[in-house]
Image 1 (cartoon, rainbow, N blue to C red):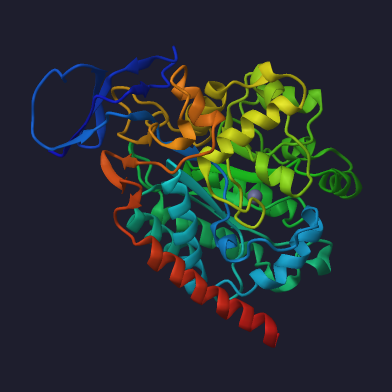
Image 2 (cartoon, rainbow, N blue to C red; image 1 turned 180 degrees about the horizontal axis):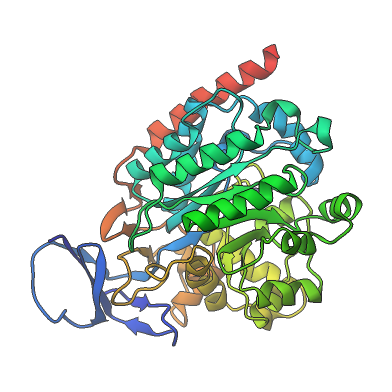
Length: 454
Ligand SMILES: [Zn+2]
C-alpha cells in the first residue's frame, strides 16, 4: 500500500460542505485516497512518507476547467484585438500546430498550472490541421509525465470561411472525420472509474466555427459514450450578433435548440447572459467555466458570476488559453475572480473563500466528479500546500487563508495528486522546468521561422 501523511499543517482548508478549516490539521492518503483528516495523530500508525506541513496551508488541489494548451507558444500577440480579430490574426499561425509544438506547449502549460497549485486540468484542443495525427496522444502523454489529473476535450471546427464561418478553411476538418476521431479518442483515453487520471470530453468549438449538424451529432455521440460535453458560448457581443443573424436567436437559445443544455454539459465564458439565460442555465443543470482574465484581456466583458451562483449554477474557474490570459497561474485566477466580481458592484459579492470554493468544488462539479475538490475522507489525495512565511504573506496572521487570495499569488510549495508528489519544494518532481522552457524556446523559434517564410 502507498501511504502519505501530510502532518501538522498550519491550517487544512477542507472545503467540505460546512467549510471546515482545521488548525494543526493532518491528512492521511492511502493508495491514492484520503482516509483521514484531523488534528493530532492519525488513528493508526504506518509506513510511507511523512510530509511536514508546519508553516503551510493545505487546500484542495485547484481545478482548471477550460484551457487551450497549444496557445502557450503564441502568447502576447494580437494585443489590441477583441475575440474575432484576435482569432483571425492567430488562426494562420495555429495552422502550424504539430506534435512537437503540442508537446512543448503542453509541458509549459501543465507546468505552470501544477506550480500554481492546480491538480486537475482540462484542455480544449480544437486545431487539428489536416494530416497531423497524434496531437491528443501527445498531450495526454505529457500530462502523465508531469503527474497532473487531465481531462482532454476533443475539440473541433467544421465551418470554414467559405461556408460563412470565422476560421480559414485550412484549419477546419470534415464533419464525419471529426466524429470518428472523437469516438476513437474516447475509446483510447477515457477512464470512467473513480480516481481516473484521464477523462475525455466532446467539445465542438463555438457557434461561428461549427455546423449545427456537428453540434447535434457530437451531443448524441457523447451521450451514447457517457462522456461530458463542452463548448464556448456567450463570450462576446460579436458572437451574440452572429447568432441573431445566422440562427435568429440568442446563443443560449441556440444551444437549447441543439439539445446542448443539461447536467452533462459545462460551458466556457457565459459573459453575455440576460436573466432568462441565467434561469435557463440553472434550470437545465448546466455548469459554467468562468474565465475572468481572458474576458478582461480581450475586452469581452465580465461574467455575471454572482447571479449564476445565486441561481444555483455550478460555477468553475479557468485560466482559458495561454494566448488570451497570458498566464496559467490558477491561484492568480482565483484572485482575479474575486476582484473582478467585486468590481461589478459590491465588495460583498465575492469573498476569498467563495473564490477558492469555485476553483475547487465548483470545478469538480463542472467535470462531473465527486472524488476531487475537497480534502475529506473518500476523496482523492489531491492537495496544494502553500507556505505562509515569505514576504508576500507577511502581516496576514489574522486570516492566512484569505491572504492566499488577497496577497500576491504564490508558487505552491508542494502539490500532491493521488497522494503522489507532483511538486516538491516548489519544483516539479518528474520534469525539469529549465528543460521545458528550453524546448519551448526551440519550438517558438521554428514557429517564427515558419511565419517569416510563409
Ligand atoms: Zn477558450
